[in-house]
Image (cartoon, rainbow, N blue to C red; front, side, top):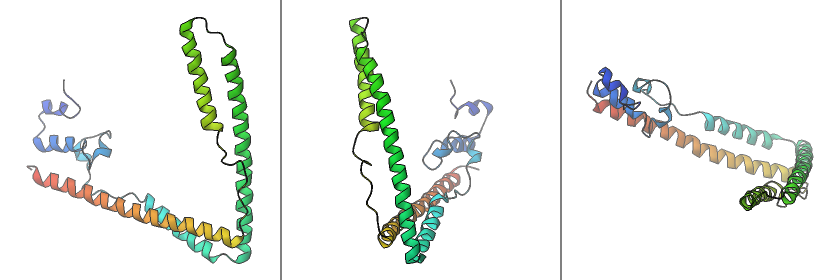
Length: 198
């Protein structure tokens, strides 16, 4: 039975076409393997994604914005950030409490249910385990129980500048890697094309 790669051999395709179609299953072109078309869809040059480059530009702009804020502006920004974080924390705590209540109500029903046979007892244990695991995962831990300390404007700015600096370093590294991968993919395909008969 022919595969997606060998089906066209019956139609008389040449070696070059077959090889380029198969190339879509390999590292340089693997992201294209499920796309429609054949090897003729492989580009001459792979372009790097601009996602990390965009995030890098945004992080640099944010760093510049933070550095330019006046003392009054950083005080206001720190206060607003704390208020928003506290609002989110309280909302999340309430959601966790509500979810725990729902889980515990269902757990009570599971615990009061009498399995009709001994074989169903394992089923009840399974249901119980699912709920207790979900309670631990979704409702456990002390994260968010206490409010974050309020930061002064300059403390907040320092923290946010640290985040921007981290983001700049991370996205610069990832952007360079993306460009390197695109060049490597382009070189792999060029070498393959050059090695095939025309």
